[in-house]
Length: 232
Image (cartoon, rainbow, N blue to C red; front, top):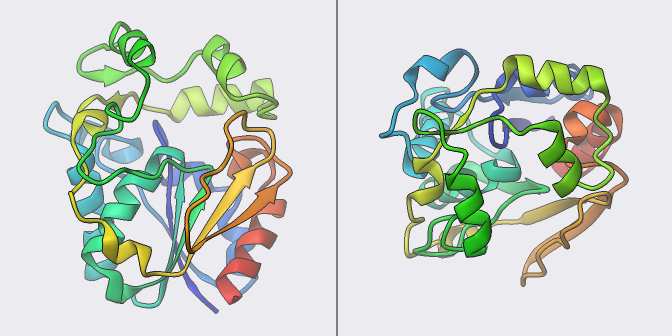
């Protein structure tokens, strides 16, 4: 049995893992899905002061206050950035990093620093009350390939999703992320995603036959993959 902590991507809270969590529990794992500040039932806590650092502290606080150790830290999409920073802070509590179609932060840079300028400009034009709005169907279809989201899935995401605080993309990562590079790390790429997975020393890469949100569209397939990785 492993202790698995789940961190969702942009707009998502612990609710996004509802289809996956019971499957991992059935495998015998102890599962902790997180809701970061400003999302889900913590939406009211988000503000212009909510940053990448805030979300990294959310993760470390959850792990420390629950007394968790030997954690398999699973981070989806945007969640890869704060999870990396959190693991750098408490590497002694992390058994393995698992990146699920995730963003990997660059030392000393914000996520916007690593994004093409036209994309940043397009995002900034959509900002409402300091947040990036939940993506429209048009944006999802244009940027995430054969994502596999049904109309019902999209309605579910939109009913619960909350806009991303803009500060989370503007806040730079720490200049030193070397501690996380010494941890066992696995990257789960989603075959339908248009972007190639990173190829970095010490980063094992496996590919899942799924779209960008496999916890929603292919929970059983993802559960099997995570069970195998957690036991490795």
